Picture 1 (cartoon, helix red, strand yellow):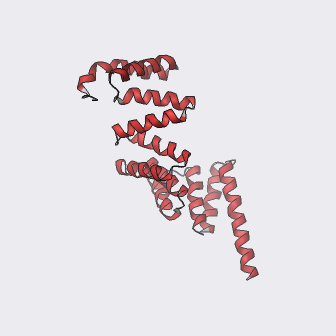
Picture 2 (cartoon, rainbow, N blue to C red):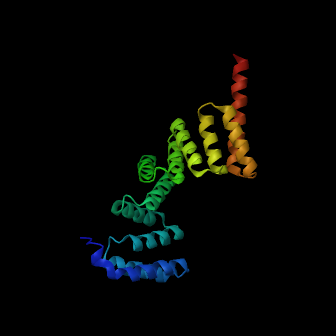
Picture 3 (cartoon, helix red, strand yellow):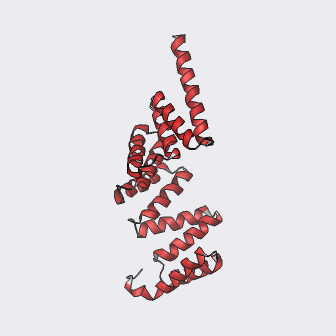
Length: 205
């Protein structure tokens, strides 16, 4: 039984102390306070979030994953938590569950560029470049910025659809904004190689 938020109102000062301790680098104090609150009220989101941040910083991936799953289960409309879950599951290669959370993020915040960016990332990994392209373009429109990483990811989607000229233009724009980005340089090199192979096959036939 988690109890109502009102029943645990007296725990708010402890939660705030835990959050402040984490911000100031007093990790042990933050962890102790968070655990104290959770012992009394295991469904409280603030101390779960504090513990998640600590486990994530420590590289304790399994513990962090369990915590973010619990937060999303308790508060499925928590945009920050849904985004964190999407990124964590993408890193694990759990594409089906990552897509479910990414779609939820778009549902929660349809006008948030980050939501569409994560949806684009997920669909790119799932080898669905046409739909990923839509979400990347939506993220660009909503942000009003030409983010070089986003441009490079969009370029990859276009390349995977055979739109080589458009992909090259985006890779070049991305490199103009961030000249030494290894991911983008590698992407452009692979595009050039694919283009050469296509040209060679055309001449051979």
